[in-house]
Length: 109
Image (cartoon, rainbow, N blue to C red):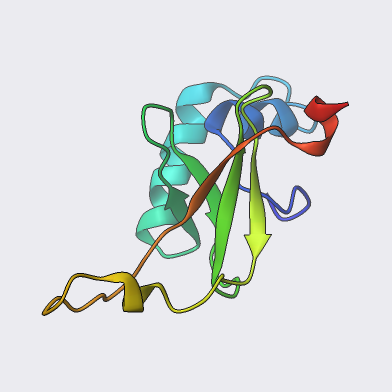
């Protein structure tokens, strides 16, 4: 996960891990991800209507880009600004997530 430098699906993790451990199964990956998540080593990137992705904890605040063609998720560094100013009158924003959807550079070409 560290070398990918982007959120990965359990299947992507399995494929990469099988290069080092050919007999590894998807159930083991899910168990490890659950343990890593519970221990605070990885965090879940939720995608509406799709399987969760996982990334290493400790990155600065960022958002995500989801390619509709290859289904990969990429980090978008930084933040577009204070989205809390867009909340309705009387509301208090405490956190936010931004998910940009489209085509990644590889799929555009």
